[in-house]
Amino acid sequence: MTEDFCASNGNIMILACSGGSNVGQLSNQAAIELTREGVGKMFCLAGIGAQLSGFVQSAWDVETMVAIDGCPVGCAKAILEQAKVPLKNHLVITELGIEKNKNLSLRAEDIARVKSAVFDACGIKPGTALTPKKANCCG
Image 1: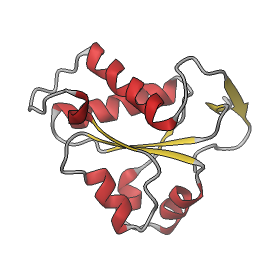
Image 2: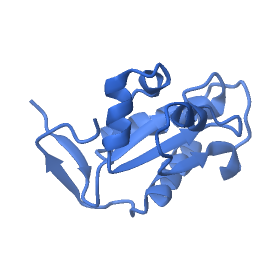
Image 3: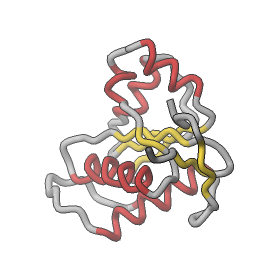
Image 4: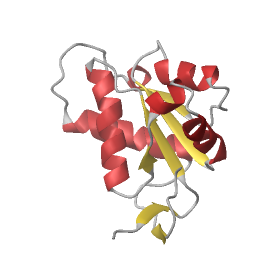
């Protein structure tokens, strides 16, 4: 069994909008890669949107969260507001200078830019030492 890993400065729940555009898919891909790298753990935004009590409670309980919206429509932010979950960290990919389009071919440099913005939003430095956690760190 593998251990969960979280940044040593706290647990990070990663919520990605995963919308039907390049920036939605950049949000999703960055969340996947950050989870694989042990920076935090991707969590089900749809479960929060459906107001499933366990998902909403996990979002309330997590120490550090980042919601990644692809565009100014702000679906992830709106889901958290509807569920009355405090917005702890939020970023919008189009505000990083990446233009929204329907081309789902993602560029590695755009994924890297989003991941870097997540580090900035959560106040951690890339390469931060990761500490193994025995329990599920992010809900």
